[in-house]
Image (cartoon, rainbow over all chains, first blue to last red; front, side, top):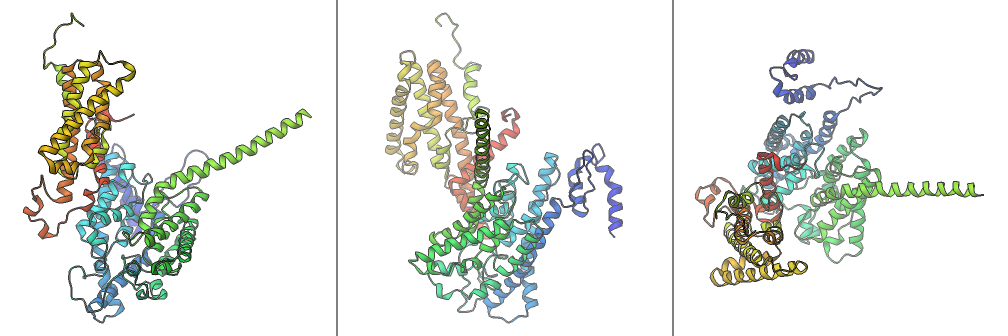
Length: 396
Length: 216
């Protein structure tokens, strides 16, 4: 099968080189070819060895890391739905039900996003960027399950065009494109993005909901001051709670984090520092607690809302995050601090992770600049001392 | 100057003074002036149109007055003189709006008063009226006001249509029956950041059509 594909592609390849009769569609062809096979590109000058991992392989690993969250999200969507209508169902049935609800979101997100990327690459004569492979899966995972598809399509288009292509495409974006899509929907159609009804499939459309089912997320309960009603830590850790599709299960996210850290693709420094920033802010709020929300144990914040998902999959975005090693610590720590601060202190926003990461995206270049500049200053001082020492010796 | 041949009133040169600011020399999209008010008054079409007219009148007539006095204004205090003239015009316009269009005046709130700090106004007085005769200055003022107004109206049209679902107060989206098939107004369009993005999109369209505007 693979051989057959390889031969077929090699056969039609000449048509797509410059000057070939289908030369115009070079970027599209290359996109497909390198999606299927590792590019056979080699260096001709000097003794460089190309690493076998390129952007596409990197992206594939991130997709793999996202799978646990996606699969659990499908199961949880079904679970919440059957719970809300008071029906019994097998776990597999729940999973399949949820999966069929999530699938359209994924299809829309990919087809709109990739469509725009293909057109943009074609217009500019660039290679097609595979940056969207991950963004396209991230976008559905941070949505409530009942978001109308046309809204998702607009948000995806907005994220790819205004969030990415305007700055020059993959690798040039200031903000995390998936979060741009979510922020766009959050401010454009708040009725579909917040509240108690949007997190459970069918609820906002007015399906029969049994008495006593609320659908409120733990964060909403906390914000309303009803901290006694939030689910147990273990339940929130496993993720059988209402929330955006992929964010509920901290366990599934941690499996993804492990994959990212072992393969060296996600920065463990950022992940650790986001969590420690969150913990520090949580403890600080505990210390000065004046209302029930501020008394919520600091480590509870890790398993509520999108904190873990943001820390593992959003903050570690290598393009929009800090690049320097010291910078990563500062960047992550501040994301953690801001997330919890917005969450607990600002009543307008029940969840702060999205805004915290977008805010720190803006500051990432400044943090890097500061880190590099302080290193330069340190070395200049050291060099200055050495020169002075030499001069002193000469005088003697 | 005295023996110079008399120029026709609507010479090609004068006409160009009017048309250039509409397109390739637009105060908002090319010179990037007057952005603040463009973000603030473009939620609905009506205030945007009133604002566009107000700015046009203020710029045109301030231009004429300054151009007429330009030889008698001491160079060292010219900015203060310009400000006095502009402020007088702004107050006049503000009072007229309060008298005859109170609702719009309330919607525009401080932004009519703030025309005085509009960069387009000060820019035209300093760059054009101080060095040209009254008639070309008048046309230049009209042109820049219209160029500013044009962008304001495009932005306001898009923001009102997509944000409130209406055009000049007329509920288009409702009449088209879009709400019943699940369409919803975009709440972000009403927020100021979206005006900035729309202005950015207009700049994008303009520069991709006219490549000579792209900074090297």
